[in-house]
Amino acid sequence: MARILLVILTMGMFSSVAAEGMFTLSYGDVSTDLENADADPSGWRVNATFETLPSKTNVVHGLTVGYIKTTADVTTAGQTTNYKLETIPFYYAPKMLLGKGAFKGFIKGALGLHFSEYQRSGALGNISANDTGFYGGASAGIMLMLGQKAFINAEYEWAYISNTYYQDEEVASAMVGLGFKF
View: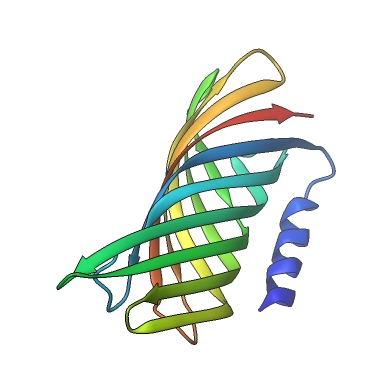
């Protein structure tokens, strides 16, 4: 799957000789929903995205790498269970720009992999697992140009993370970012 992802990204990013590059650094709040658990961990996230915008099109091809950290403490019948999840997503992020001028909306996909660490500790013992799996989702947001080369963006992303050894997750993120064109 990683090879297919790299081929798609390479073909998309270099499909046009005249392309504009963009780099965005985003930060935001995250909430997750663990499968078969009463815990809803929350935390923070940071993303770095490199994108190319081929000339004469509104389709942007991007590659994102991030870091997500969430925690939760759940008390049931007087016993507390602590959850800690750390995830590094790496994904292809095609984006469709909507609108013209300094203010644009966008919709974006996410298709890639994640590397995650899961820890649960409490009265019943400790569990720790590391896993790699599928990362896929979608987002919507807005971009506001601040002159010719800088912009700010805000977006909401929903993603699904599959895991082999522990619960699958749904991840919801609200992020703001600062970007530059080059």
